[in-house]
Image (cartoon, rainbow, N blue to C red; front, top):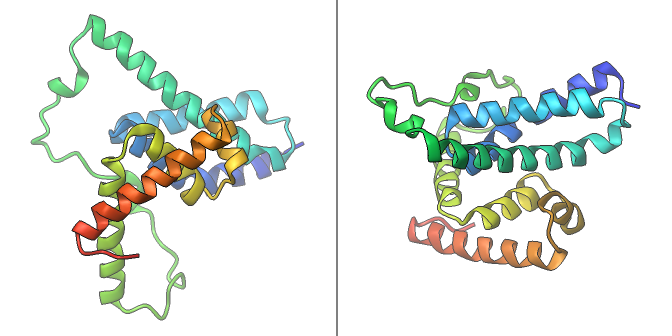
Length: 188
């Protein structure tokens, strides 16, 4: 049974990664924040009595289901109303990532030169843009396997598909990313 502190610590550690995962899926900062917040609330309200070892898998499943729910709600809203994004101006400059303003520990990479950090930052930005170009299921499988470091069985459970499907999606995603990054001059 997870204590309140264990649950709080767990949510603090997955917050940024969950936001990025949701952002890759929904492609809007505000919706991604809403999705992560909803997933965290669901975990806290309904599964806080579970052992702390079960929290990562439960949270991943809840996050994926919340992303699907978001798309379902968007589809229903689109039938009855105009899209919210078409009403927003976009010229007001409000399209920044609020989690990027968090402070990084000063001792996180002490030996790294600023030029290396800049190059790494640019490479990560290019990879993120390449990830956005992948189909949704490939992106989901790739993020779960290689970013969240889930094994094939866990990723299949989160995605609600077979292990073979996860392997296929990951393989296609890595090949597509390799081609996209090669075109940008990046080889990993």
